[in-house]
Image (cartoon, rainbow, N blue to C red; front, side):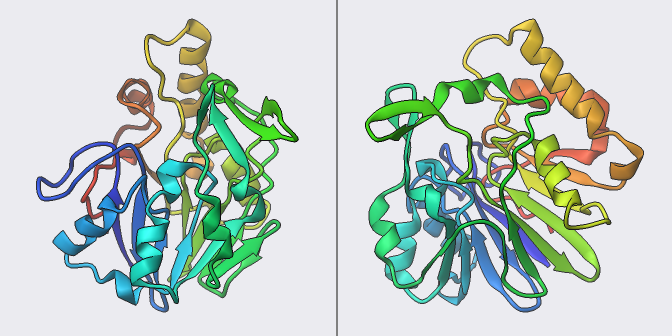
Length: 271
């Protein structure tokens, strides 16, 4: 399996652009796929710089309905209109960060290649999607600034538009989640409902980023999350994180997880 970070908030390859967004390219035995497309089409130029042919991509997974994960989908679709795009139907909702609209361009829903989902989906023996993550264990307080508009009224976003991808190769599982808005521990709890074997690798933002200093309660949530990721069950799982995690949160978690916590960057190849 080959995994390349096509877009992330920080520079990992001087020939690659970086922006607030996420895009991950994966090659498996059967597939060439994208998980998210960054905030713009810049990820496509990065792919070109890295020698990745996006016209060969057959599957696109949109992790949730925020612009920084789906902003490049229109540019991608223009060059590869046949790749199937899997997204939750609720990803086309009206999502906000305070007063700023952060949702996707809803014209995406009209593409013939879009496969709208209302929950989980087994694509084949390699690819499985799940959502409906309802737990709230160590829920990041930064989520409280995010809302959705329904019938003209603002309400707390419950992130029902979020979906996670499990890739199975050689008997091992790789779990990819865009931002883990519902909390990485709750994502893993949902994963365990489908798989007895823990993932070998997790690639995900942890949505802990915040402007300004953390409150003591927020620091406690971050550190306790790291402790919970140190259980015997997850002893062999490596966590690749970035984007919405933020450097201060990464620094708080690193002493607990050590070499099992790795920061991702734009243009970085994981394997």
